[in-house]
Length: 70
Image 1 (cartoon, rainbow, N blue to C red):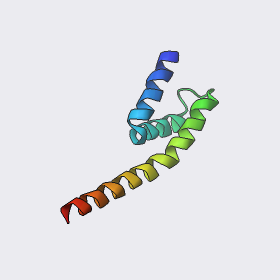
Image 2 (cartoon, rainbow, N blue to C red):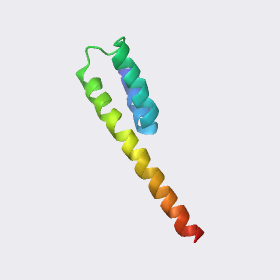
Image 3 (cartoon, one colour):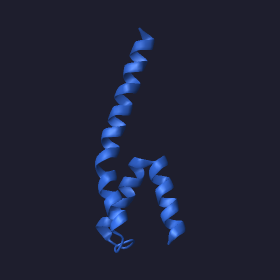
Image 4 (cartoon, rainbow, N blue to C red):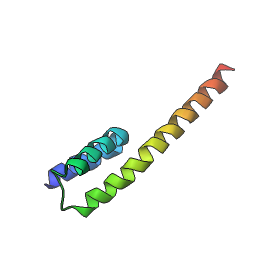
């Protein structure tokens, strides 16, 4: 159980958006970690933030690209 938790936390850091989709699937099916409130909390956090973070990242990326281009 601990090794699975460690792998999951590592994936969240590396791939927040894909991991949030994975946790969404888990919470809907409720097959794994159903007793763990910690993971449910992380799941809720990672629903909301990856979209906003990816939006910020992409918009800043395009801004920098346009600055360099001009």
